[in-house]
Image (cartoon, rainbow, N blue to C red; front, side):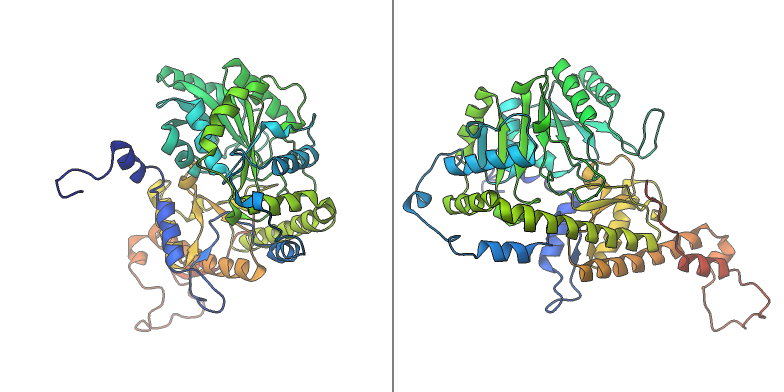
Length: 479
């Protein structure tokens, strides 16, 4: 508050300050920043298995980025350039997406806008596509920061399409998206007087790690076309697919889109190129009006010229990409995923079968004291206290408390330490849950007390079942 008693901020500023970014997960990240784990300098610090960053390929990137010619600078790279991105960089992106997205037709570089990260693209698209109070359809659970990216500028609201773990008739796996669920959600929004303007799809999915098959993509596009919805395809994990038997279909690969003028693709360097700190995202849209409007906002979200040059060199080096970087990245992702999933198996935590992304979606429901968000967050805080930072399902607007996301794209040593800290908390929670479910007379007795006479060896302790059950862990179930 200012000295006169009013606020220093406008109403919009106050809304931003107290907006969707002020979540519990944000508080957890702030705690991590204050006490980050380091194997040498802070081994008791907080392990971050929450933030989706690929930390497996620094050696490859360091070698490639320090080759001769990568520090090349010409005067035009240090001057004002086209706000939508340097032409040569957009050409390199177009060629890259055409090849690796297996595009049905060549991607036009004149339809590409470069910004400082996909969050800027989300914010800009929401501003030019929607009016305050409009809604966007999005299947839950989903990357929760989308609310921040879209809400701060556009002041629009999410219309959830709830996906649940129970497999119902006609479904083949948990958390399955169907057009029927989209229909139900949009009808509910219309009854509430919400004008829905867009459908957001994340493929590969965050946090589920699922990949939408081509037929489902087509059905979703047809659905959006019927309701005249814009489709925002977030393919930020396009090339972070590690499962050997999986096939990823980019929206670029589909022929004859039902409504190409309302179909927009997002991709960036943070995940597939393990460069979260480089802050470069791209928008591909064939709609000239939208391109022009977003271009105006790109003035505030540009990328430095030297960064665009360096990334152009990476995109153009197909020999390095095809023979070294992408094969090595895929192998390392697969190995890290297997290590984390195997470790979770040893402590009895089921996971959803995932194919892409940098994380697993794990089921902690049996460790909750109740099926509530409060119980989920209580467990999450206990993990934080044990110096382990992972993501609670409520951060992804999951409708079933007890699911958590764990990122696996980190070193083997950190994954093993993560599992050790996780097991310590969950064993303690298992014992506490069992004690709470025991008869009161047993619950009030200590598990081990030197003051009592030892029982005969053939006499069963009332606590033996608790002790054994706390130590025995279930094997994994992969949904």
